[in-house]
Amino acid sequence: MLSQKHLLGLENLQKSDIELLLETAESFKEIIDRDVKKVPTLRGKAIVNLFYEPSTRTRTSFELAGKYLSADTINFTSSASSVRKGETLKDTAKTIEMMGVDAVIIRHSSSGAASYLSRHVTASVINAGDGTHEHPTQALLDMFTVKEKKGTLSGLKVAIFGDILHSRVARSNIFGFTKMGSEVFVAGPSTLMPPDIEQMGAKPVEIIEEAVRDADVVIALRIQLERQQKGLFPTIREYSKFFGLNKDKLALAKSDAILLHPGPVNRGIELTSEVIDGSQSVINQQVKNGVAVRMAVLYHLIGGSRE
Image: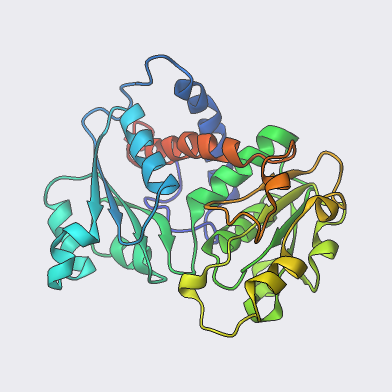
């Protein structure tokens, strides 16, 4: 059983919890390839996807994860709810909880929204991304994908590059990979680098080539223009030239290095099409693994193991 009732982030999640979730995800993955993708594990449970921000991969994979486990899933969007009439997050969550839900999966533009919600509802809360804070299930599926390809998470060099400052994925990956024994290097423009990056456990370097050199794992991040103030870098073209990844830069990594991206990918900016569609890319595998990981999270938070 997990040591916590909620999944709010990886910073305070125990290593044993991460190991348990990854092990469970491995056993659930084979369900995705079945002709009948259904097991009765969460029959009778109700799950709400409470998304205040747009999402394709995360929302859909959580919905499928719940349905594959026979839970009843409901999708909530702020644009088609009482939020447009001024209802607060707390009141919205309380209303939903009174309908008898067992888990609330929340994505919100404000950092700390998931933690705030967990203090006001009795249902399990799963953070599907809160502001620039954390995105724990994305990091879990990244680690699951790496472990699947490399056999271990210990002793690896992981290079993360791009918009580190605004990336909740970067934070969760730094916490997760370092906790599991990997060494994490980060690269990006100095204006897109958090001042406390070393306190998180990562090693900042000035150029992408230094981060990627001899890396086992390379993780690209999207430029989050929707969260940025203007003037953090001159132009998209210049950013792509110095901090985008092409086949020549990727060649600096180990020959068996793998390339990940949380999506959506801006082709020609952070990654060229050649590396996105290349043999080292596991971006499509990440999407599939995301369903298995989220099945594991739901199972351990509201399933039989907690009972």
